[in-house]
Image (cartoon, rainbow, N blue to C red; front, side, top):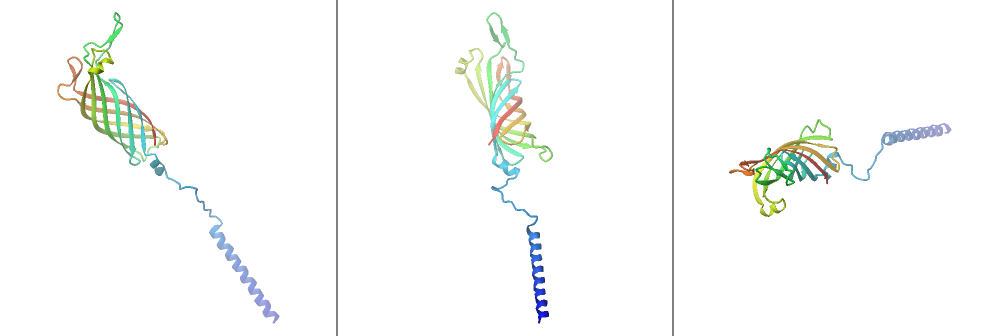
Length: 233
């Protein structure tokens, strides 16, 4: 009887030990090297973060053969490589051979044979596509762009004082377009900086519009170098 009792007790102890070891092994396999973290808010990929900043706007500083200009731009990011937007700037328009002279007797400067002061104001709708986005670093993003839209041309008589001449101003509206290349710099965070080279083609038609007497301008626009400074929002 005692022998039977000892055998049963031994079997019970062995089964208990085996069960305990199995439980420990199963627990270790499930939890020993596994750590589960639950973030306080949803983690976002870079594309999702850029989706929160899909608009850009700012000012543009322009330079061409006609001098300096000032404008503004707005862009909407359709995806990582495509943007659509609008651009507008104001710049002088003149013949490239206009030379200004200074009259020592009167103390005034003048341009011989100049007839009108001309100002060019193009408003274009543009589409921009990034280039080589898969191989280049995000801090340097070259692109190509093209746009179309109306161009407003203002003419004031040169033989009148600068501000008084606006009382005799004439407005003209023409249609044109532009193509260009450029590059944006820096990471796309909250600021936007790019350099652009654009060619604007704006035919005037007819006999053109004179800046210098007998030398009418029949095609406005030309090559423009611009610096775009703005922010993303």
